[in-house]
Image (cartoon, rainbow, N blue to C red; front, top):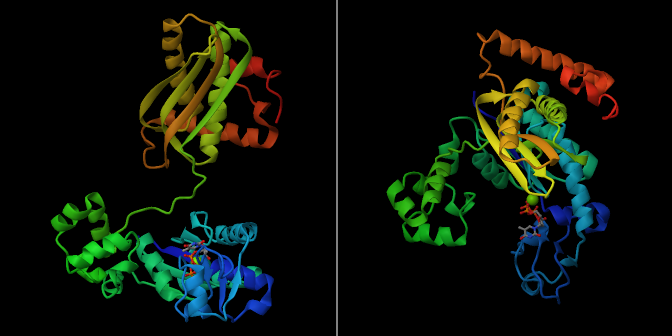
Length: 393
Ligand code: TTP
Ligand code: MG
């Protein structure tokens, strides 16, 4: 299935926020960045100011010379941060696959969500409308099958734009554009490419790969792929952290093996519940121990395939624990268990492995009960003794 990825970027962001707070600034050449007699540079320029050649990064003095009637504002970051948070919250209502890139810019994977709104075009319009009515800001949206093409599309559509590149049209859309429009091409790369006779993205798309690699190394290949509209990068929500772990420090250092095992079981169940709530499976299990003298060790085991069951986390942790305890005789001060190398579940599930499936169903049933009645509502044999130690949620 072709992906439908949106790139959403607010128009003249800092300036637009100022205009919302002070409508007298609307429709005028406005610059955020400082007073014209200050040293700094332009952070944002209204489109009216851009008509005079003003742009981000230009020294304020130059901006003042080109457009003396412009209104110069110092700006204040907290206002922009607040607007940014509200902007992202609106986007999150449309798809959970949201990747903020900067304060005023994000990717949204809309694949499968567009039908709710009729079409992808209508979905983009609904997004623009909410941003307009709730924030008073204007967003430009690019839609394409990949991040790179979506980003170029939103940029080309500005201001107040909405541009969809149909699947299959990526190369012909990009080809006539100057190379500087391609993300990843800065001033220096542009200069080298031009010296090689490469001026448009189309030129780049047919340039010999060997020459690009010899000038730019591995990134030469990436640019070549981008120029051909090929970009497999996923939209990655930021909160998808790469590991989950739980640890506990004992009130008193201990050598009691069954106590250590029971603690490990309890921590494994907590990690497992978290993992399943996030809808992930883990390939790597890590045990952490801190001994009485504060030496800390971690021991890791990689599973042959992803798992999200308490039993697998515990069994693996227990093996690591037994080995560690046989090598070190000191009492233990802290024990922890963690999972990493998180993957999406699904395909790996072996339909023939009935016991694995049963375990999975059991874990889900336990999670449901615990969600309803609290974590300690159900205890396995090994954690029973913790019923009173770990309080109800
Ligand atoms: P951009 O999205 O690059 O610029 P913009 O929103 O002002 O204009 P448009 O997207 O319509 O082209 O950056 C977003 C904000 O980030 C911008 O309003 C101000 C800030 N910024 C800087 O502070 N310094 C800079 O050099 C740039 C490019 C942006
Ligand atoms: Mg912007």
